[in-house]
Length: 506
Image (cartoon, rainbow, N blue to C red; front, side, top):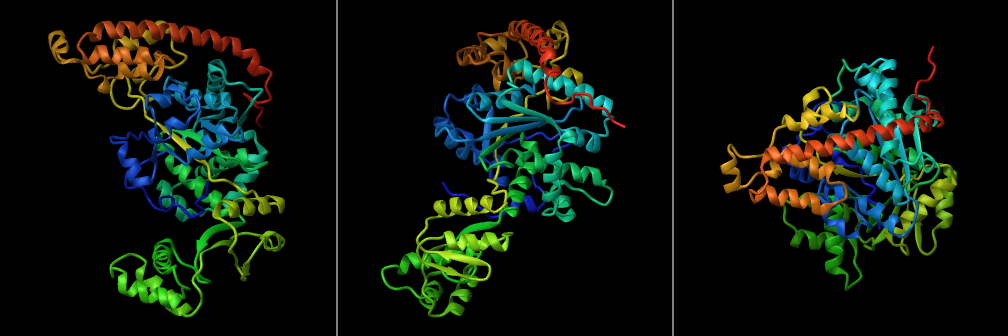
């Protein structure tokens, strides 16, 4: 597997499909995320996932970035990590259980798993008092533990209490600037500095699992959090000592130009290829309006009789002089050394990536692997629209009285027809039904056959909304009662952990 070390263009500009990490984003068409931001469809990876979680099997987890890197580590029994944060602005609700489950599943697959309380973000971006934050933080942690997170095998922390994260945030801040944050998040002259600082702290959270040693790391999120993922991936690249790219001559070429150079080389590879020959071939065979063509021809012509040969290029980004010298010494075979890069002719890209990271870590660098991500669909609110903590009727809090939770289900919107007769004739619309989502996302648990039976009975017209809601309400009441009992059992466990639920403040 090779690592793309180029910067992500999406992180540099404002989103044309609005993704607001602090707003009330809804995604009308998840396919737009594939086209707009390069999120890849998860279903293509599903066959390679060991014992996939039901959220994966039911396409609730719908997209990813570089998750194949995590799967490979999982299958090869190599180190990997999973991390997610929770902003304690209200009660944890059933929508948050998606992320709890994703973290716990990765922990069960052998990953180093981290769950954090994003209290700095809650204080700066949402203006919550520290007393409010402390109360909600305890609730999130109790629910996470009650669902099965193993604190002995994982890490729990608060942003405000974690010095290593804050130190890493300071270092990452050197590579970020106000213009970039403004383009990504819409920050302007009225945005307070603490809010901007909380963003960089989140970047440190995302990269923190790799602080001791680089490892594939997945961040499970909703799609509204993708701006954070893109910026973290970009910063991970900027922090690296070396970039590893492909080149064909001593000059630098951007990706569009490089594609033309490669095409010319492949066409002429049966003979000794000179840069000037490749320029002539492109002038004859290239289409004038192709991006990068003119630049490629100009650079090839300037290189003249220099041989055109594929090689791996190590770019000096942030390397110390000692690290750069160590890299030169470590490259076996034919190489060319320049002031700011080294070309190696006997290494493939994957081996070069491993060598660059090894030398970087040995010489005091981080060697970050760009973080991966998986994306789950938003749960529809019981009243329609997005499930929101600010609309009590739209969601079921994990702290709701079980009978009250059941009542919310009974009062919820459905995807049913206007009349029972029409429902029996045409069938229901489970794909548009918040009540069916309760089964698929939560109530059916790991039992795919149960979720499928509810779906099929609905579409066939054999299941009417009243009976379906009554069944879901009963299941929800049992779920909440069981969860809350388990939460109480976790209180002494939480008290014994090192994390400060209510730290002393001056």
